[in-house]
Amino acid sequence: MNADTKICGTDPSSEYVDLAAEVLGILSDPTRIRIVLALRQADELPVNALAEIVDKKPSGVSQHLARLRMARMVTTRQEGTSVLYRLTDEHALAVVIEAIKQAEHAVANGQIPPHHH
Image (cartoon, rainbow, N blue to C red; front, side):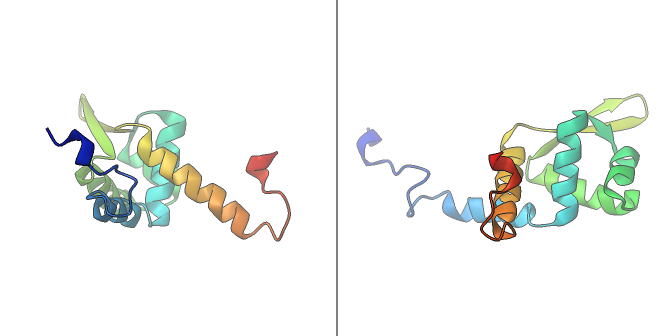
């Protein structure tokens, strides 16, 4: 076995670095961030409800959801004629929350950001 030679996922030479960059790329869109945050609050939502929350057209939200679904960040469940979307797990949300905390630091001007209170 090569268990002793396996590289940790957080090592700079890890095979996961390129995939991590793809994850960050998918989450680099403000609408997708808003979708992730909306799904955090509501657990499951249909496209029209998400579109209303993020103030975008349902067709555009559908395209964003398709990207998030291809990346396995969201999953769907059929309920009658509605398709409900939910976060697959907590990891995309954790990335979004950390990015928001970093953004708070960036604009804090030497003050303590809100997430530190």
